[in-house]
Image 1 (cartoon, rainbow, N blue to C red):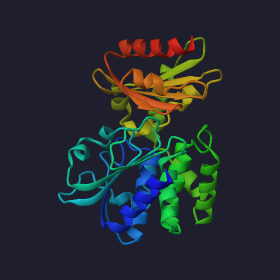
Image 2 (cartoon, helix red, strand yellow; image 1 turned 180 degrees about the vertical axis):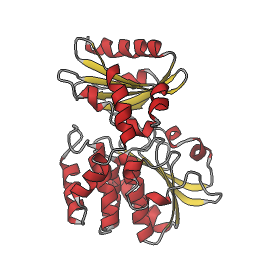
Image 3 (tube, rainbow, N blue to C red; image 1 turned 90 degrees about the horizontal axis):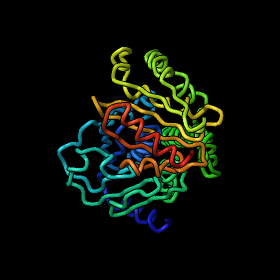
Image 4 (cartoon, rainbow, N blue to C red; image 1 turned 30 degrees about the vertical axis):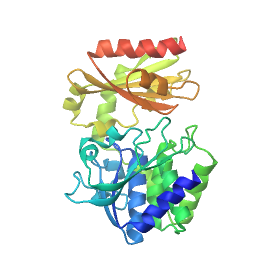
Amino acid sequence: MTETIEKIVAEIRSNSSFLLTSHEGPDGDAVGSVLALASFLRLIGKDVVVHLRDPVPEMYAFLPGADTVQPHIPDRAFDVACVLDVGERRRAGEEFCRFTRVATLINIDHHLGCESFGHHNLIDPAAAATGVLIYRIIQSFGYRLDRETALCLYVAVITDTGSFRYSNANREAFSIAGEMIECGVNAWDVAEQVYENQPLKRLEMLSLALPTLEVFCSGQAASLTVTLDMYTATGANAELTDGFINYPRSIKGVEVAVFFRQTAAEVFKIGFRSKGKVNVAGFAAALGGGGHHNAAGCTVSGSLEAVKSQVYAIVESALC
């Protein structure tokens, strides 16, 4: 691990142009990590372009550098491309996967079973967030964090640990968050931006999703569903359903939560969450997806009834 970080630091020192990206449908760790690395690289005089296939979610638009994220990769060459938090290269999007004008590819991630597709692969499933790995790189570089970089790292850590509620909230995560506060990050300001600033459409969507709640497997599992009709009725988008899976997971006795989110006529994105006893990465893998022990996902085609039947059978085989 240390040797890989040293190699990445050497690449940073010896190159001048960098392309940074992360996964489709970026979450707090993806956005926070990529913007933190971009902030650091710019401060040491590097030429940086940040590309994300999907827009930065509104709740993270306050982060420094969020307004510089580009939906398309410029027609130019880069010395280094850094791919953060993707698990699988394809999750960075087709445009990035087709892009070849890069001399060195660096893969930085904390997903269990992440593909080693880079020239350098910094992969540590024990890290609470990809932001933690970015922090380690910056520390190894010998750079003192400024407030803007610290803010991005803080958001990466708190969102991927569920504000330190998840089992990945280890000592290192708390230590990094504390250091970010010392760098000038205001914890309440961040909490207000991320958790206390919900668009009305999100709550309107939630009011339609909650009646779909289903509890199964003798109360050990529960699910929630969002359909295309709900998007039409509320004018909300997929971004506004982020965190909905926490409602079924919060039910007493539930060990596994499932979120069905319709993306096309007969296509559903499935999210799995565990309270810790069950490895939901196995559920997602059985359906062609992947993820962590406590959080994983996949995409399944078919009618809602058929998809639910298939998913419930997999969950029940492990729980019931």
